[in-house]
Length: 318
Image 1 (cartoon, rainbow, N blue to C red):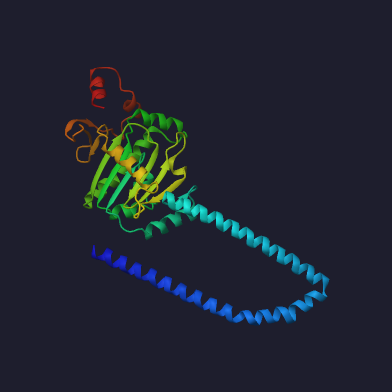
Image 2: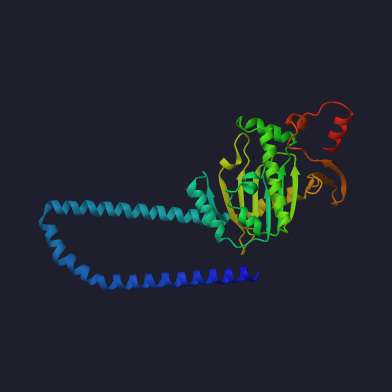
C-alpha cells in the first residue's frame, strides 16, 4: 500500500511538472510572436507587397494561396467544433476509449492506457469462456487482475443449451470441446490467483448474455455479445465512473447489469476444491450441488444425456 501511495505521488508530481513546462513554453512562444509582429508587418508592407503588386503572376499565386489557406482554416475550425461537440457527448456518457479492430496499434494503446490506471482492489468479469481476458498471455488485463484482491467472474456454462446454440452459430473451427477447453484454461488461471492469496469467486450462468462486462475499480469495459460473431471481433467501449455525478454516464448502468446477474440465485457458484456447482436459495443458503463438466467427456453427453434413471437424476441436478 505504501508503494502504491509513493507511485501515486510521483505520478502527480510528474503531471504537475509537465503542466508547468507547457505553460512556460506557451508563454515564451507568445512573447516571441509579439516581438516578431512589427518586423513581419514592416517586411510585408514595404518589401513583399510592392513586388506582388507589380507581378500579375505572383499576385494570382498569392490570391490562390490565401484562398486555400482560408478554406483550410475554416475546415479545421469546423472539424474542431464537431470534435468539441463529440467530446462533450463522450464526457456525458463517461466514455474514455473505444476501438473496433484489434491490431498492434490498438493493443499498444490498450496497454498504455491500462498502465496509467490506478490499481483496483476489486475486479468483476462477466464474459463467455474468459480465455481472451483471463488465460491468454496477450491479454492486457492480466496484470491488473493480479494486483486486485477480490475477483468475481461469471462464465457461460459449457453444458448449457445456450452454449450449444452459440457454438453452432460460430465458425466450424470453434467446437463444444474447444469452448470447454477455454473455460478450463480460465479456471486454471483463477486457481493460480487463489494460490496467490486472491479472493476469487466463480459463477456460471445458463443463458447467453447481451454484454461482456469487465470492471476494474472505477473503469469498465463493454462489448456486445452478438450471436454468430466472436466477442473479440466486436467494438469495445471503456467507461469511467464520474466522481462528481455518478449517475451521469453509462458506467453505473453496466455495473448494475453485472450486479444483477451476480446476485441472481439461479447462477451456481463453482467450488474450486471439489469441482462442483453449488446452488443456493435467495438467502444464500446452499441447497444442492452438481458435478461440473469434465473436459475429457464428449460434448454430446453434456448436452443430450441418454434416457434413464441416471440421466433423470443428472438432469434434476442441472
